[in-house]
Image (tube, rainbow, N blue to C red; front, side, top):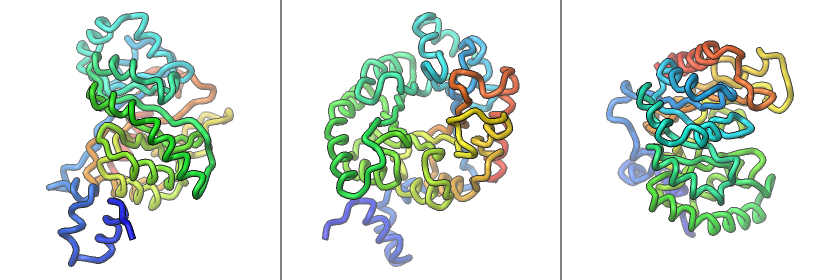
Length: 311
């Protein structure tokens, strides 16, 4: 019988305290914080939360959201990636520096996961360290079909992972419901096949079963392979127009999902990646609320809710 690293971790942990030294080899255990009381989330703001407002208006809102980093989104969700091209790299860096904000990542749905290498280089030049994308289809596969396609995907990703390693950035694979890597099984398969620290999961709980224990368990299985986390639940969905109060139920403090077990798992692995309070408006490309200051206020309400649960 052959065991992969995740299976070994599960077996060792299940065996009890007599195997604590063995279990400590597991990625999740290796991240245990020295002092749990000091655990905190590190926040990043998604530019598309503000629709297509100018970067000059969005960047000053980042510190007001108690975040240190900005994530850039492109059309149709926002247009800040296009704005960056218009203003140029130097002016963008000056804008970030003026407000003491750092670039964190680009979400690259516009380009696709196999066409991100130019974006990797740009992100690195701008001081960022991550590119994020979903995988595309085929979707809704199970069993041997899923395993075959995940193997093909992992093989096809090899040159892109090598490029990320060379450039010095991380590829965040989002578990998007419209793609191959979407289900917990597909996530496990992928990260059993690829062990480079330059690729990890950009977790979107919205696209997972809305079961806190399942989400938390997956977080603990991933350990350091969790590289980006969206505080985003399904609520009533984001594919059709709803009254604003129902649309906002994608946010942690408004929807029905119990975040306590999820946050406990993030704390247990001492998650040090960035957390993005997130939702999609309908239609795409508009701010989640009409006024700039109300968007920031809503982000802060979610942040305060998460922090109260951690406390």
